[in-house]
Length: 119
Image 1 (cartoon, rainbow, N blue to C red):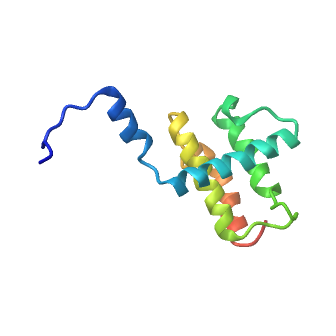
Image 2 (cartoon, one colour):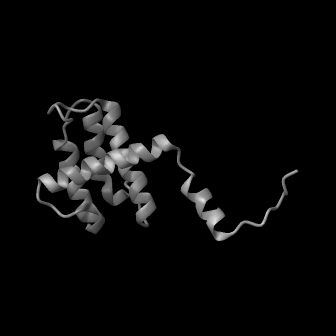
C-alpha cells in the first residue's frame, strides 16, 4: 500500500512540476513560441525573451497582424487562439505577468479582430 504522506525529494517535486502540462500542451507552446521567434528573426528584431512588457506588446500587435501560415495564408481562428495561448503559457512560466495584463490590451484587441476575421 502506498504511503499517504510520502517523503519526496527535490527531484521528485521538480518532476511533478515539469509534468503538469500534457505533451500536447508542451508541443503547442513550443510551436507558438517558435512561430514568434521565426517572425522576429525574419524582421531582424531581438528575441522576445529580452523585451519588456511594453516592447512585447508592440511586437505582438504587429506579429498577430502580419503572421501567416507557411502557405502565406491567414491562420484559422483556432490557430490564432492557439498561438496566443502558447505564447501566454510561455510568458507565464518566464515572467511575473501574462498577456492578460491590462497593459497588453492592444494585442488582445487585435487578436480578437483576427479571430473575428478582420486581420
